[in-house]
Length: 416
Image (cartoon, rainbow, N blue to C red; front, side):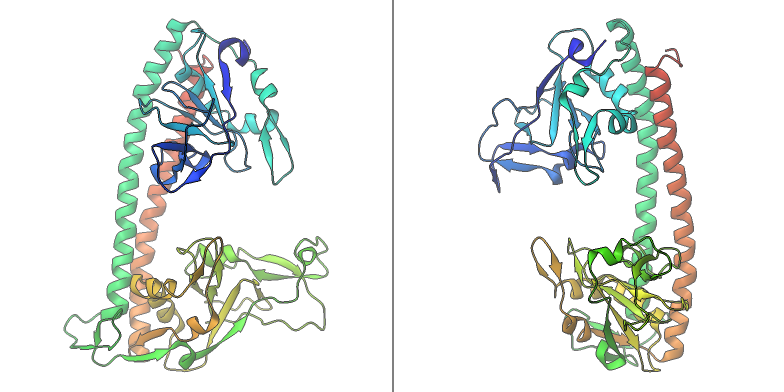
Protein backbone atom coordinates (compact mmCIF):
# COMPACT_ATOMS: atom_id res chain seq x y z
CA UNK A 1 0.00 0.00 0.00
CA UNK A 2 1.03 3.61 -0.47
CA UNK A 3 1.46 5.96 2.47
CA UNK A 4 -1.42 8.10 1.22
CA UNK A 5 -3.68 5.01 1.33
CA UNK A 6 -3.09 4.34 5.01
CA UNK A 7 -2.60 7.74 6.69
CA UNK A 8 -2.81 11.50 6.12
CA UNK A 9 -0.06 14.03 5.58
CA UNK A 10 -1.44 16.58 8.03
CA UNK A 11 1.12 19.31 7.75
CA UNK A 12 4.61 20.35 6.72
CA UNK A 13 4.48 22.68 9.72
CA UNK A 14 4.81 26.45 9.58
CA UNK A 15 7.16 29.31 10.36
CA UNK A 16 6.32 30.32 13.94
CA UNK A 17 6.34 33.77 15.50
CA UNK A 18 8.98 32.93 18.11
CA UNK A 19 8.85 34.38 21.64
CA UNK A 20 10.82 33.71 24.82
CA UNK A 21 8.00 31.97 26.68
CA UNK A 22 4.39 30.93 26.05
CA UNK A 23 2.09 27.89 26.39
CA UNK A 24 2.60 27.12 22.68
CA UNK A 25 5.65 24.93 22.11
CA UNK A 26 7.40 24.45 18.77
CA UNK A 27 8.90 21.11 17.80
CA UNK A 28 11.82 21.34 15.39
CA UNK A 29 14.24 18.72 14.08
CA UNK A 30 16.58 19.07 17.07
CA UNK A 31 13.66 18.43 19.43
CA UNK A 32 13.40 14.77 18.42
CA UNK A 33 16.24 13.81 16.02
CA UNK A 34 18.23 12.12 18.81
CA UNK A 35 15.39 9.69 19.41
CA UNK A 36 13.73 11.33 22.39
CA UNK A 37 11.81 14.51 23.18
CA UNK A 38 14.59 16.96 24.03
CA UNK A 39 12.96 19.74 26.05
CA UNK A 40 16.16 21.82 25.86
CA UNK A 41 15.54 22.23 22.12
CA UNK A 42 11.92 23.32 22.44
CA UNK A 43 11.09 26.87 21.33
CA UNK A 44 7.92 28.92 21.83
CA UNK A 45 5.48 30.75 19.56
CA UNK A 46 3.13 33.57 20.44
CA UNK A 47 0.02 31.72 19.24
CA UNK A 48 -1.26 28.37 18.05
CA UNK A 49 -0.14 27.47 14.52
CA UNK A 50 -3.06 26.69 12.25
CA UNK A 51 -2.97 23.08 10.93
CA UNK A 52 0.41 22.36 12.57
CA UNK A 53 -0.72 21.03 15.95
CA UNK A 54 0.80 17.70 16.94
CA UNK A 55 -1.53 15.12 18.47
CA UNK A 56 -0.92 11.97 20.45
CA UNK A 57 -0.22 9.09 18.07
CA UNK A 58 1.26 11.25 15.30
CA UNK A 59 4.38 10.26 13.40
CA UNK A 60 6.82 13.17 13.12
CA UNK A 61 9.48 13.27 10.38
CA UNK A 62 12.37 15.71 9.80
CA UNK A 63 11.78 17.21 6.34
CA UNK A 64 14.96 19.18 5.63
CA UNK A 65 18.65 19.11 6.45
CA UNK A 66 21.45 16.82 5.35
CA UNK A 67 22.20 15.56 8.84
CA UNK A 68 18.77 14.63 10.19
CA UNK A 69 16.39 14.51 7.21
CA UNK A 70 14.25 11.39 7.50
CA UNK A 71 14.62 11.00 11.25
CA UNK A 72 11.28 9.98 12.76
CA UNK A 73 9.61 10.27 16.15
CA UNK A 74 6.41 8.76 17.54
CA UNK A 75 4.54 11.32 19.64
CA UNK A 76 2.95 9.51 22.57
CA UNK A 77 2.14 12.41 24.91
CA UNK A 78 -1.15 13.95 26.00
CA UNK A 79 0.42 17.42 25.88
CA UNK A 80 -1.49 19.11 23.04
CA UNK A 81 0.51 22.34 23.05
CA UNK A 82 3.17 21.21 20.56
CA UNK A 83 3.26 22.58 17.02
CA UNK A 84 5.52 21.59 14.12
CA UNK A 85 7.79 24.14 12.49
CA UNK A 86 8.35 24.31 8.71
CA UNK A 87 11.13 21.71 8.81
CA UNK A 88 8.93 18.98 10.30
CA UNK A 89 6.21 16.85 8.67
CA UNK A 90 3.25 15.27 10.48
CA UNK A 91 1.69 11.94 9.47
CA UNK A 92 -1.56 10.98 11.21
CA UNK A 93 -3.71 7.86 11.38
CA UNK A 94 -7.19 9.14 10.52
CA UNK A 95 -8.35 6.06 8.62
CA UNK A 96 -7.89 3.24 11.12
CA UNK A 97 -6.01 1.11 8.60
CA UNK A 98 -2.72 0.92 10.47
CA UNK A 99 -0.87 1.67 13.69
CA UNK A 100 1.37 4.75 13.52
CA UNK A 101 3.73 3.13 16.02
CA UNK A 102 4.24 0.31 13.50
CA UNK A 103 4.96 2.92 10.80
CA UNK A 104 7.41 4.61 13.16
CA UNK A 105 9.34 1.36 13.60
CA UNK A 106 9.26 0.77 9.84
CA UNK A 107 10.73 4.19 8.97
CA UNK A 108 13.17 4.27 11.90
CA UNK A 109 15.45 1.82 10.06
CA UNK A 110 15.04 3.44 6.62
CA UNK A 111 16.92 6.68 7.12
CA UNK A 112 19.32 5.95 4.23
CA UNK A 113 16.51 4.88 1.90
CA UNK A 114 14.52 8.04 2.61
CA UNK A 115 17.52 10.21 1.82
CA UNK A 116 18.22 8.27 -1.38
CA UNK A 117 14.70 8.15 -2.84
CA UNK A 118 12.35 10.68 -1.24
CA UNK A 119 14.36 13.90 -1.29
CA UNK A 120 15.71 16.40 -3.76
CA UNK A 121 17.91 19.46 -3.54
CA UNK A 122 21.54 20.51 -3.39
CA UNK A 123 24.27 19.14 -1.15
CA UNK A 124 23.66 21.95 1.34
CA UNK A 125 19.87 21.99 1.26
CA UNK A 126 17.90 18.79 0.75
CA UNK A 127 14.17 18.50 1.22
CA UNK A 128 11.69 15.68 1.76
CA UNK A 129 9.18 15.71 -1.09
CA UNK A 130 5.58 15.32 0.01
CA UNK A 131 4.46 13.61 -3.21
CA UNK A 132 7.35 11.14 -3.02
CA UNK A 133 6.52 10.27 0.58
CA UNK A 134 2.80 9.85 -0.05
CA UNK A 135 3.52 7.60 -3.03
CA UNK A 136 5.96 5.43 -1.05
CA UNK A 137 4.87 1.77 -1.11
CA UNK A 138 5.26 -0.76 1.70
CA UNK A 139 3.79 -4.08 2.75
CA UNK A 140 1.29 -3.62 5.57
CA UNK A 141 0.22 -6.63 7.69
CA UNK A 142 -3.16 -6.81 9.35
CA UNK A 143 -3.91 -4.60 12.34
CA UNK A 144 -3.71 -7.66 14.60
CA UNK A 145 -0.21 -8.51 13.34
CA UNK A 146 0.86 -4.85 13.56
CA UNK A 147 -0.28 -4.80 17.18
CA UNK A 148 1.70 -7.95 17.95
CA UNK A 149 4.80 -6.52 16.25
CA UNK A 150 4.54 -3.23 18.14
CA UNK A 151 4.14 -4.97 21.50
CA UNK A 152 7.09 -7.24 20.79
CA UNK A 153 9.34 -4.40 19.65
CA UNK A 154 8.31 -2.14 22.52
CA UNK A 155 9.44 -4.81 24.97
CA UNK A 156 12.68 -5.74 23.15
CA UNK A 157 13.72 -2.16 22.44
CA UNK A 158 13.00 -1.13 26.03
CA UNK A 159 15.43 -3.85 27.22
CA UNK A 160 18.15 -2.66 24.83
CA UNK A 161 17.56 1.02 25.62
CA UNK A 162 17.89 0.28 29.33
CA UNK A 163 21.29 -1.34 28.72
CA UNK A 164 22.35 1.63 26.58
CA UNK A 165 21.21 4.03 29.30
CA UNK A 166 23.22 2.21 31.97
CA UNK A 167 26.31 2.13 29.78
CA UNK A 168 25.85 5.82 29.03
CA UNK A 169 25.78 6.61 32.75
CA UNK A 170 28.93 4.54 33.22
CA UNK A 171 30.64 6.41 30.37
CA UNK A 172 29.59 9.77 31.86
CA UNK A 173 31.02 8.71 35.23
CA UNK A 174 34.38 7.92 33.60
CA UNK A 175 34.37 11.30 31.88
CA UNK A 176 33.64 13.05 35.17
CA UNK A 177 36.50 11.10 36.75
CA UNK A 178 38.84 12.27 33.99
CA UNK A 179 37.79 15.89 34.47
CA UNK A 180 38.20 15.67 38.24
CA UNK A 181 41.62 14.00 37.88
CA UNK A 182 42.89 16.77 35.59
CA UNK A 183 41.38 19.52 37.75
CA UNK A 184 43.03 18.22 40.91
CA UNK A 185 46.47 17.62 39.39
CA UNK A 186 46.84 20.97 37.61
CA UNK A 187 45.63 23.09 40.51
CA UNK A 188 47.08 21.26 43.53
CA UNK A 189 49.84 19.04 42.16
CA UNK A 190 50.47 15.41 43.10
CA UNK A 191 51.66 15.92 46.69
CA UNK A 192 48.66 16.38 48.94
CA UNK A 193 50.94 17.67 51.72
CA UNK A 194 52.07 20.77 49.79
CA UNK A 195 51.37 24.00 51.64
CA UNK A 196 48.98 26.34 49.85
CA UNK A 197 48.93 30.11 49.36
CA UNK A 198 46.37 32.57 48.04
CA UNK A 199 47.03 33.14 44.35
CA UNK A 200 45.51 36.62 44.52
CA UNK A 201 43.22 35.73 41.61
CA UNK A 202 39.62 35.11 42.66
CA UNK A 203 38.82 32.44 40.08
CA UNK A 204 42.05 30.52 40.77
CA UNK A 205 41.93 30.56 44.56
CA UNK A 206 44.72 28.76 46.42
CA UNK A 207 47.76 27.15 44.78
CA UNK A 208 50.82 25.34 46.16
CA UNK A 209 53.27 27.76 47.75
CA UNK A 210 56.12 27.04 45.32
CA UNK A 211 54.00 27.53 42.16
CA UNK A 212 54.34 30.79 40.21
CA UNK A 213 51.92 32.79 38.09
CA UNK A 214 52.51 33.76 34.47
CA UNK A 215 50.51 35.27 31.67
CA UNK A 216 50.63 33.20 28.50
CA UNK A 217 52.50 36.04 26.80
CA UNK A 218 55.15 35.75 29.53
CA UNK A 219 56.00 32.20 28.43
CA UNK A 220 55.64 32.52 24.66
CA UNK A 221 54.06 34.39 21.76
CA UNK A 222 50.92 34.00 19.66
CA UNK A 223 50.93 33.53 15.90
CA UNK A 224 48.13 33.55 13.35
CA UNK A 225 46.63 30.88 11.16
CA UNK A 226 46.28 30.98 7.39
CA UNK A 227 45.65 34.42 5.88
CA UNK A 228 44.82 35.77 2.44
CA UNK A 229 43.09 32.60 1.27
CA UNK A 230 39.93 32.38 -0.86
CA UNK A 231 37.31 29.65 -0.81
CA UNK A 232 38.74 28.23 -4.04
CA UNK A 233 42.13 27.74 -2.36
CA UNK A 234 40.52 25.23 0.02
CA UNK A 235 38.70 23.28 -2.73
CA UNK A 236 41.52 22.53 -5.16
CA UNK A 237 42.07 18.85 -6.04
CA UNK A 238 45.47 19.45 -7.64
CA UNK A 239 47.81 17.64 -5.23
CA UNK A 240 50.86 19.35 -6.74
CA UNK A 241 49.91 22.80 -5.47
CA UNK A 242 48.32 22.06 -2.07
CA UNK A 243 49.82 21.65 1.38
CA UNK A 244 48.33 20.36 4.67
CA UNK A 245 46.85 22.48 7.41
CA UNK A 246 45.29 21.66 10.80
CA UNK A 247 41.51 22.16 10.60
CA UNK A 248 39.21 23.53 13.27
CA UNK A 249 37.87 20.05 14.11
CA UNK A 250 41.32 18.64 14.87
CA UNK A 251 41.55 21.08 17.77
CA UNK A 252 37.90 20.90 18.79
CA UNK A 253 37.78 17.12 19.22
CA UNK A 254 41.30 16.44 20.48
CA UNK A 255 43.50 17.32 23.44
CA UNK A 256 46.55 16.31 21.39
CA UNK A 257 46.56 17.37 17.74
CA UNK A 258 46.11 14.32 15.52
CA UNK A 259 48.43 13.67 12.60
CA UNK A 260 45.60 11.85 10.79
CA UNK A 261 43.23 14.78 10.41
CA UNK A 262 44.71 17.35 8.03
CA UNK A 263 42.96 19.32 5.29
CA UNK A 264 44.66 20.86 2.25
CA UNK A 265 44.99 24.37 0.82
CA UNK A 266 46.69 25.88 -2.23
CA UNK A 267 50.10 27.24 -1.24
CA UNK A 268 52.48 29.22 -3.45
CA UNK A 269 56.24 28.49 -3.45
CA UNK A 270 57.13 32.01 -2.27
CA UNK A 271 54.16 32.42 0.06
CA UNK A 272 54.76 33.04 3.75
CA UNK A 273 52.46 31.41 6.28
CA UNK A 274 53.16 30.36 9.88
CA UNK A 275 54.19 26.71 10.22
CA UNK A 276 53.00 24.71 13.21
CA UNK A 277 55.79 23.20 15.30
CA UNK A 278 56.13 20.58 18.03
CA UNK A 279 55.06 21.85 21.50
CA UNK A 280 52.83 24.59 20.10
CA UNK A 281 49.43 25.00 21.77
CA UNK A 282 46.62 25.78 19.33
CA UNK A 283 43.43 27.70 20.16
CA UNK A 284 40.00 28.08 18.56
CA UNK A 285 39.39 31.82 18.21
CA UNK A 286 35.89 31.62 16.72
CA UNK A 287 33.05 29.20 17.34
CA UNK A 288 29.30 28.71 17.14
CA UNK A 289 29.00 28.27 20.92
CA UNK A 290 30.66 29.20 24.19
CA UNK A 291 31.48 25.58 24.96
CA UNK A 292 33.99 25.37 22.10
CA UNK A 293 35.50 28.85 22.13
CA UNK A 294 39.20 29.05 23.14
CA UNK A 295 39.43 25.24 23.21
CA UNK A 296 43.11 24.24 23.06
CA UNK A 297 45.11 21.26 21.83
CA UNK A 298 48.85 20.65 22.04
CA UNK A 299 51.14 19.55 19.21
CA UNK A 300 53.36 16.70 20.45
CA UNK A 301 54.87 15.61 17.13
CA UNK A 302 56.93 17.20 14.38
CA UNK A 303 54.55 17.20 11.41
CA UNK A 304 56.93 18.99 9.07
CA UNK A 305 55.45 21.73 6.88
CA UNK A 306 51.92 21.95 8.26
CA UNK A 307 49.89 25.15 8.63
CA UNK A 308 47.02 26.29 10.84
CA UNK A 309 43.35 27.01 10.11
CA UNK A 310 42.36 30.65 9.61
CA UNK A 311 40.06 30.73 12.66
CA UNK A 312 42.79 29.55 15.02
CA UNK A 313 45.90 30.89 16.76
CA UNK A 314 49.01 29.16 17.98
CA UNK A 315 51.02 29.74 21.15
CA UNK A 316 54.72 29.04 20.74
CA UNK A 317 56.37 28.54 24.11
CA UNK A 318 59.79 30.19 24.31
CA UNK A 319 60.54 29.96 28.05
CA UNK A 320 62.21 26.82 29.36
CA UNK A 321 60.20 27.18 32.57
CA UNK A 322 57.01 25.99 30.83
CA UNK A 323 56.24 22.47 29.62
CA UNK A 324 53.65 22.51 26.81
CA UNK A 325 51.73 19.30 27.75
CA UNK A 326 51.27 20.53 31.33
CA UNK A 327 50.19 24.00 30.20
CA UNK A 328 47.64 22.45 27.86
CA UNK A 329 46.28 20.18 30.61
CA UNK A 330 45.86 23.22 32.84
CA UNK A 331 44.15 25.19 30.08
CA UNK A 332 41.72 22.28 29.59
CA UNK A 333 40.77 22.12 33.29
CA UNK A 334 37.39 23.42 34.37
CA UNK A 335 38.32 26.66 36.11
CA UNK A 336 40.83 27.74 33.47
CA UNK A 337 38.43 26.92 30.61
CA UNK A 338 35.58 28.76 32.31
CA UNK A 339 37.73 31.84 32.90
CA UNK A 340 38.82 31.95 29.28
CA UNK A 341 35.30 31.40 27.92
CA UNK A 342 34.13 34.31 30.06
CA UNK A 343 36.30 36.59 27.92
CA UNK A 344 34.52 35.61 24.67
CA UNK A 345 31.81 37.69 23.04
CA UNK A 346 29.18 37.22 20.35
CA UNK A 347 25.69 36.01 19.49
CA UNK A 348 25.38 33.97 16.29
CA UNK A 349 29.17 33.62 16.20
CA UNK A 350 31.34 33.61 19.33
CA UNK A 351 34.81 35.16 19.15
CA UNK A 352 37.67 35.82 21.53
CA UNK A 353 40.34 38.47 21.06
CA UNK A 354 44.00 37.53 20.95
CA UNK A 355 44.88 39.82 23.87
CA UNK A 356 42.47 37.81 26.08
CA UNK A 357 44.43 34.67 25.32
CA UNK A 358 47.79 36.39 25.77
CA UNK A 359 46.75 37.83 29.13
CA UNK A 360 45.30 34.58 30.45
CA UNK A 361 47.00 33.44 33.67
CA UNK A 362 48.54 30.04 34.25
CA UNK A 363 50.12 28.79 37.48
CA UNK A 364 53.23 26.69 37.00
CA UNK A 365 55.27 24.49 39.32
CA UNK A 366 59.00 23.92 38.56
CA UNK A 367 59.65 22.36 35.15
CA UNK A 368 60.38 18.83 36.43
CA UNK A 369 57.19 18.83 38.46
CA UNK A 370 55.24 19.92 35.39
CA UNK A 371 56.66 16.92 33.52
CA UNK A 372 55.77 14.57 36.38
CA UNK A 373 52.19 15.84 36.54
CA UNK A 374 51.80 15.63 32.75
CA UNK A 375 53.16 12.06 32.71
CA UNK A 376 50.79 11.10 35.53
CA UNK A 377 47.83 12.58 33.65
CA UNK A 378 48.88 10.91 30.41
CA UNK A 379 48.78 7.52 32.12
CA UNK A 380 45.55 8.10 34.05
CA UNK A 381 43.69 9.67 31.13
CA UNK A 382 44.81 6.91 28.75
CA UNK A 383 43.29 4.29 31.04
CA UNK A 384 40.06 6.24 31.37
CA UNK A 385 39.89 6.86 27.62
CA UNK A 386 40.42 3.15 26.97
CA UNK A 387 37.52 2.30 29.29
CA UNK A 388 35.30 4.86 27.53
CA UNK A 389 36.25 3.42 24.14
CA UNK A 390 35.19 -0.06 25.27
CA UNK A 391 31.85 1.31 26.51
CA UNK A 392 31.29 3.20 23.24
CA UNK A 393 31.86 -0.02 21.29
CA UNK A 394 29.34 -1.81 23.52
CA UNK A 395 26.80 0.97 22.95
CA UNK A 396 27.36 0.88 19.18
CA UNK A 397 26.88 -2.90 19.17
CA UNK A 398 23.58 -2.54 21.05
CA UNK A 399 22.41 0.15 18.62
CA UNK A 400 23.21 -2.13 15.69
CA UNK A 401 21.34 -4.98 17.41
CA UNK A 402 18.35 -2.70 17.98
CA UNK A 403 18.27 -1.69 14.32
CA UNK A 404 18.67 -5.28 13.17
CA UNK A 405 15.80 -6.54 15.33
CA UNK A 406 13.45 -3.79 14.14
CA UNK A 407 14.33 -4.41 10.50
CA UNK A 408 13.91 -8.19 10.78
CA UNK A 409 10.54 -7.88 12.49
CA UNK A 410 8.94 -5.23 10.26
CA UNK A 411 10.07 -7.10 7.12
CA UNK A 412 8.78 -10.46 8.36
CA UNK A 413 12.20 -12.09 8.57
CA UNK A 414 11.66 -12.61 12.30
CA UNK A 415 8.23 -13.91 13.23
CA UNK A 416 6.67 -12.74 16.48
